[in-house]
Image (tube, rainbow, N blue to C red; front, side):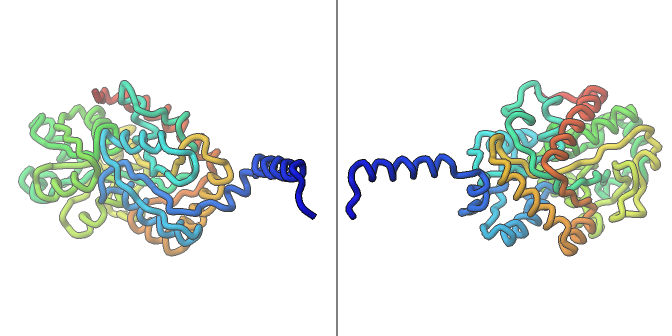
Length: 333
């Protein structure tokens, strides 16, 4: 029987209603149908980059599409974060955010090109990471710096002579150094880079003297003898460097603690079904024996919390670091 115009019109209307009623769950089940970008807002070689590149292939295997890591460094992570904030909320652009982009920068910068809370949908914590205070071995020998007290003593006697590298203004690496300077009454000249990778190159090369780096990116240089670890910045010693004291116990620098964290975020408005699926697959990958052991060997503590838990953590970290920024007196124009 041939369709009448009325029947064809009714069929079209029903089709439109079916499409309009297509659930977010169905969309999430179809996602991803093309490669997914993970934007790293720092240069290659740093911990943010290391974690993203460790996680990307695991997500690719689990979800059947390639996860591509793209480095977008600049302005303490702000440029890459802003790009993701402006991206379509369709699950195809993600941010490997940090304590800098989502805990520190809004207290440090007078104006951010994104809102850390309103512009993002938290997915999950990927890892917590202690920072480590490292020094160029040749400089350590020349300046007779073999411990944290030695460093404090030298810096006080020679204000402004030591060059302190960081992965960029506003990063946890920068603030770890500023907090140390504030609590010890020392002055070292801060040199911000576009990520840990290039900063470490100059530190190993001798252009820079000291650095408070994330443990995973510094670990190969420490193990290779190219950098000397003086202390870790966490409240307890790291299992990856059990013989290296904390700054609080080595200094002693009372009240000192400044660790980092890294996590996946999507643009605000990304369907909850996609966010939840990403969290579940990321948590599975981080719990796998191979990846878990790999991260822990580098000094990272794997995460995997829920989007709600991660959002609550970001809120708490924002308040915590606001106090650290104020106490340190750190500023970025």
